[in-house]
Length: 104
Image (cartoon, rainbow, N blue to C red; front, side, top):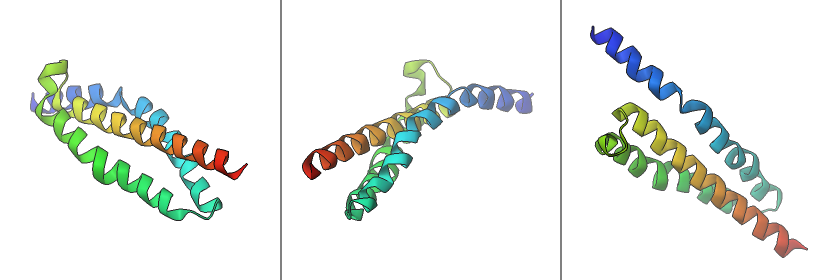
């Protein structure tokens, strides 16, 4: 019974994984642009933003407040990670855009 319950929770969390992957694509593709422009510290900051500043609190929030959004804790944790990836991707895209504008 516990195994079936664990499978059910994991299957619910798998639904968010394609969203997580899509939210991460701009981050991974654009982060290397900073190195190409000779500004690797922006790439380092973008990585720190995602993995140190955004992900831990949003994963924790998902684990502790999952009932508010009506999800299982694991599902809410993956949702929090997805939101962190989206935030980091938006930040990275904005910084690359600003870098391109300043180089014109």
